[in-house]
Length: 426
Image 1: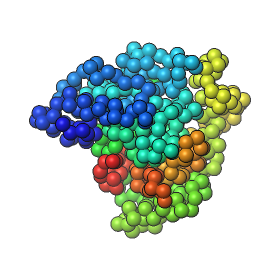
Image 2: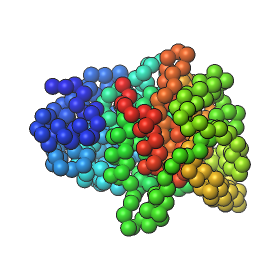
Image 3: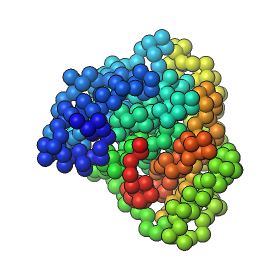
Image 4: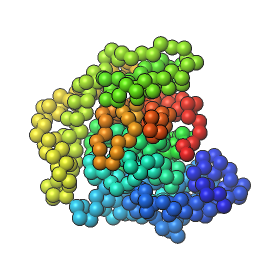
């Protein structure tokens, strides 16, 4: 039996299942064998569904054979949701229903393997998850379990979320692909809410083909969501190229910036364009402060009960206390500013692809802080972002390069990303 059946692209899995070259049980065995081979070291999973409890989907469902990890802030019917905590700080919720996005994927044939570890309430305290690429380096924080599970070859896709850089940064650190769709494109019902304004459901995967299949299945695109149908017609045709790398965007050193810019020039050589670096109307400096204020204020509201019960870490408590001190007037002022900046971005970035660093450096050593990057800008503006493992540091560790585009151009962005990265992560 092939030891990587569960990592194949969906078209190959579907063809092989229908022609009976492989069986669903062989795919499951492949996945669980991969997890059992190194999970004791990697620690990517909070819980696993026993293999004997996995129902067999029909072969004609679009996602049959897909083995899926789910960040431990999404409700699933068979598992407790711990929100990145343990019994000593928070009791979690028992599995009784599926988050809407999980339900859509399960009903399309996907198999939920289990819950991936996440930071405390998807915000602060890191987990004990190990970076499969380099055990001495951090895998990231919030969506680290999903990124590590994909990098370790446990699954080909993990459901994740991003409020600042929680998909792009772990994907960069672990050398896999991270996709944050346009704000609201994947439903948030049944998912821990830390902010109303920024939380975005996305995907971490080993190939753009699989990410595309899952995204197109799960996105909100029916008549109950007319605004999304309207915005999702945006496409990229001979887009102009903008580079968001430098002091206004990140704290990367010059070697990393030059490495990224040379890679961008190599990737876009056939376009023969001048690269634009000036964003005339988007106020990035104020946007960073805006994100911080809104994030803190909304988090302090949504986690108020947990903080009052004393069930959070010191760092998370201090951040929510800061949020409590922000006045409603200041919060409203920042919401107005954010609304204006989103409208500006939708106008200025039409038919534009932005290249940016997914992380300002390779993954830091375990316990060391992250270097400031630009991810929260794209999250705050609600723009689709995909991180590709295209750069290698001097120490041979991965660094992601992000493509960002106009809101609603998700499908076109995935098409472009597939041209740049047609294969799978190893």
